[in-house]
Length: 454
Image (cartoon, rainbow, N blue to C red; front, side, top):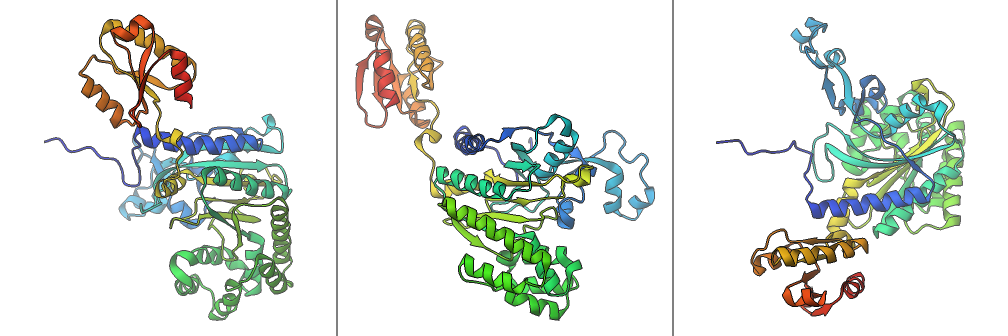
């Protein structure tokens, strides 16, 4: 017996109705990207591992999908590594390429590679799949889509304010209630200085970024494992416990980090971004979270994370400022800031809340019944006119029994069925049936267009 086919864990198939809903998300995001002046690019699914490694931190590097070299991939590899099961070092010898982990690092590579062709500041958007060798769970997949918008070649915090407005507009159109969390990597660096462990900034940010997931006690335990002293951990606690309004939190941070030049600069940048957003107005809830780090090494300034308020799920959008990313590819002095929408998690949120509009739930608006060659010929002429008017329409391909054809339309939730028999042919009209109300009327093509478009 043949084995039942399956797909890898953490990946999914999507049915036509699911694709209609996903395209509603992609189209909404794409429209807002264009509204804000971003231009679309695409990059390859695979990149050289040298491009990807070392850009996401130690944990991120472990989640990269590596691709074995073609042919005899062990040729030239150190056999001692194989015999000693040292796969960490062996991987670099047998894998030259990997699937992209996100869209930001490939974008940085793109900017460096094509810098002589670009006009700075360069505003790009990209909607493509990414892959992570993560443990699959609710809201976490091994293959998923990201929808990114980035601006490179400008240090201005106007860009952060614009991106927050863009995020607000997207989720307003999708009717998802969100909280936008803000922090600044310079604030985190200042905190590391304050507790006497500036060299542990990466260890601190990786650990405290997990507070929402594992709780403060487990975070403290991880900090100890990462070499922080009990004194430093104790000093850190009141900082992570800062509360009150955003204004009050900024005042507390300003006071705490007054002796740290980089920390004070981070607070100043946060003030400017928050002030700019508040002047313009925001439909979303804005929150300042000093534990927010997002665990990625390349953020250097503003850090952004978006959470859905009405569904328990991980972040649905994230991003921030990355002043040094292109420098690792040989182009220094190019600052960038960007955000990434997690389309798959947004899809899960919309499914949970059933927020799709009717046009995202159905594609075909009218189906013509097929009674035979002559009737089908007339129907197809009418069908062409409906399509020319922008109405999605189809004809049942076979002259099957009426019950079967109507069952097909009902199963696909097609809202209208057009019947063209001998009587309708002589009058060059169709019997148009509303599948929801059951009402039907004899109408011309022009009248049908008007009824269906309503």
